[in-house]
Length: 339
Image (cartoon, rainbow, N blue to C red; front, top):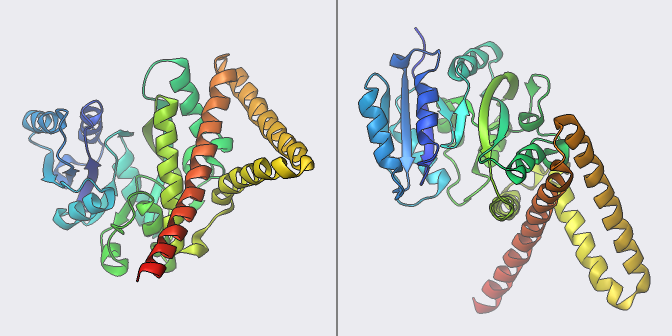
């Protein structure tokens, strides 16, 4: 018998994409009778809930359970969904992701074949809107300059990794290591994965598991997204400093160096030269990679859009990481002197 599978989805105001996700789940090669979808909704106000009810009415053979989570905190939504889920296996998806037709079947097969605690695959990043800037952001997010060595964005061979998105795991692991950390508004998945690895569980990447993820469409929304990543990455590292990877350290180090050189240049002229060298080398690398992407994709707009997207990602992530360190330090001082 095939194991029962619960697909859990945290959701808030996802009217534009929720139907596509549900349709993709409905069309899975895995038996519909062995699937359920648990959507933890933060009380959406854009028609998302009505869209879910309408889809469920048209497809009664697929079990869709909509639960309320007014907190609007992703780890809290995931924990609540897991609590009510009935499946032996859990697959976490996002409302703006589209799993390939064999996604569930591939996940369950690879979980069984590898004996891994958790499996995941490649996110094929696509623009969420038409236009040169949205295309540039999607390409930058899947390029090594933007994603470093994250195989789930850049591809690669099957094997053990430190994290994967849109994961499949056996629910027994929640009992072993505990639920998602609800004090982390972002990065809750990486922290959960780290605890699995600490408990000697294997996290397995397989490129045959594929889904589509829709990137942000503008620089402002991209900056907010990566600022949240950077801010909460430091908060996660306070709990697990040994989980730090080199790719995560580079953006804050780059931004910190630039800030220190700007300040030092006021008093020490050579610092201005060092800053110019740093920014020149960085700009040259970004422009070179952007040119390669423009030629490879036959899209001249990438000559401008790619550097804009990458710089936004790096500076937002690195700057927010540093801001997280500073605000945490200041809160500690205030607490110390007021207690």
